[in-house]
Amino acid sequence: MEYLDTHPELKWHLWKFTWASAVGQAFIFFVIREFGALVNTQVTTLRKLFSLAWVTVFGSIAHRLFSPPGAEEYKGDSLSLYQWAAVAIVFVAIILGEQDKKH
Image 1 (cartoon, rainbow, N blue to C red):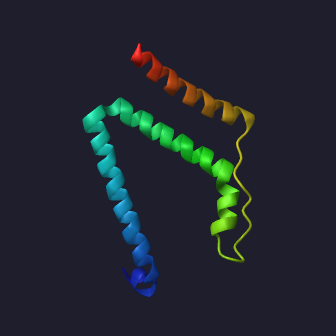
Image 2: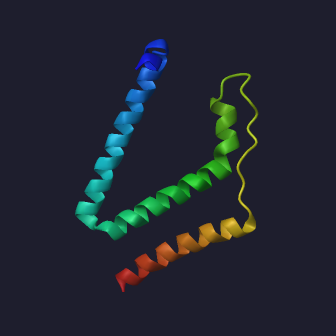
């Protein structure tokens, strides 16, 4: 608390983080209750994959757009060919699993 008293600008960020965490937990509980644990696992996996792809593809662009002047240069994130193949395998496996459920 003493640190927050000396850095009051962090209180708003902490408040936003707390609310985002609470909403995220509520969403997880809702998905599990309505659709089951397997769907929650799929949603979580896809969210993580989309986040990974987003940062990899658009990370440097976002850094240039939203960083303050004089910020450290963004070195970028990259995936090897094998890592991209693993991402594709996970996407394909989830899509095929959904297709299998329909038949």
